[in-house]
Amino acid sequence: MAKRTLSFSICMAAIMAVLLITSQSSGGAWQRSAPRPPATTSSEAGRGASIIGRVVLPSGHPVNGRVKITLSTLNDPGLALYTDDNGAFVFPNLNAGTYYVEATSDAKLYDTTTEQVNLLRGMTSINVTIYLREKSQKTGNSASANVVSLAEIDPNVPAAAKKEYQQGSNLANQGHIEEAVERFKKAISLYPEYLVARNDLGVQYLKLNRVSEAVEQFEVAIEANPKAFNPRLNLGIARLKQKKYVEAAEHLKMAYSIDSSSPASHLYLGIALVETDDIEAAQRELATALSMGGEAYSIAHYYLAHVHMKKGEREQTIRELNTYIEKSPNGEQVEQARHLLEQLKQ
Image (cartoon, rainbow, N blue to C red):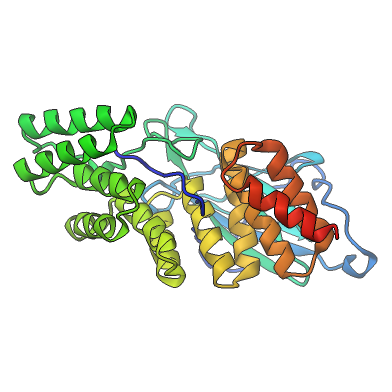
C-alpha cells in the first residue's frame, strides 16, 4: 500500500478549499445561543464576522438534502443548525478567534468531518467548503499512515508484479530500503503503469536522499494519473526538500483538492508557506493540521513558532516551542527548538 507521508527534518499541510457563497445563502435555523468565542479586545467588540460555508459530497458535487452543522470553540460545546437542501450554511455575528465546524450526515455512509476555521481581526467573513468522507475511505492519523486513494487502484496489475511489489513493501517496512528499491523496480519493469509501485519507489529514493530520482518517479505517476493523491503529495514533499517552496505549495494545494481529509497536506503546505513568508495562510494550515491530525502532527507547533517569530510575537513563539518540546521530546527538530528558546530568553 502506498505511503502517504514521510518523516524529514523539515517534516510535513493544503489551503482550505474555499467555495464563494453569497451572504444570502440560507443557513438553517438556530438551535441554541451562539458558542462563546475566544476572548476579544474592546476594539473588536461589535465587529461580528460570518462563517459562510457549504457541505459537498466526496466527489465535490453538491449534497442533496440537509446536513447537521455544529459550530464550537475550545470553551463551548457548540451551536447546531442544518444546511439548506444544497448544503449551504451561515454562522453570523462571530468574534475573531478559532472555531471548529463539524458536519454530520448519514452515519451509515459518511464519517463526521471537522474543519478548523480561524477568524482573524478585521475579517467580515470567511468561506469554507466541507467535504464529506465516505465510511470506506482510509485515512491515517499519523505522519506515516499508509493510504491509497481510489485513483491509485489498478485492477490490471499482473500477479507477478503484485508479488514483487508486496515483497518490496515488506522490505521497506523492515527498513531494508536498498532491497525494497530493487523489488519496486522489478515490479515496474513487469508493469510500467504500476502507479503505486512508482510512488513507493519514489518514497524509498527520498529516504535515501536521492531526491531527483524520487521526483522522476512521482512525475511519471502523476502524468499517468493526475488524480492520484500520494504521488502528488510526495512530489510536494520532494520539492520542499529541494527548497523549491513555491512549486511545492502548488503541488500540495493540488493534493488537498484530491483528498481534503489529509492533515499531512495541510502541514506540508504550512511549511512551504512559512518559507515563502505567506504568514497568515501558513498559520491557518498548520493549525488545521493540528486540529485534524492531533499529536501525530506536533511538528506543526515548531513551525507555528516560526510564524509567530516572523510576526514579532515573542511570547507566542516561546509557547509554541515549549509545546513542541513537551509533546515530541524526541522529535527531529527538538534540538533546534531548544537552541531557539535559549536565544529568545537571552
